[in-house]
Length: 165
Image (cartoon, rainbow, N blue to C red; front, side, top):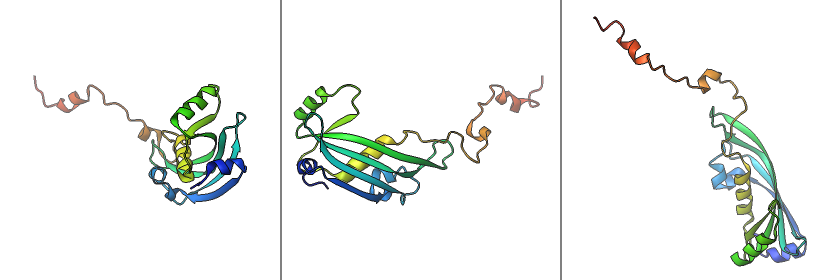
């Protein structure tokens, strides 16, 4: 927990650490190996317009579940985001109106403290693929992955020989 983000940014402070995926309940539910560790770095500063800014970097390897073959899908994460902290929703709206459409900075409402672990988990969840899958699933024949539709005549095949004219 970052107790005073304004002071943290005023002093241009830095924090870093490592945390296992198991420490993030929502993320751990998507991973096949909760002991994977994520490294994170948080740096406080001010934006060009003088707003409080947190720069968050998260990296690591995540073992997700391939949605095709249900085997482990190894995903390398290297995510960086800049967050402007607003005191109120109104201030956040005003800050967002000053940003260009293609500006990679996000605006969040942060009070007297910021939960760093929630920021990290949110960033990782937004960075991983919505439907993780291998380009080519290992050890699975293609015909197992692609279900061939039944022939419309397969029902008639069972009747063959039973009907006499």
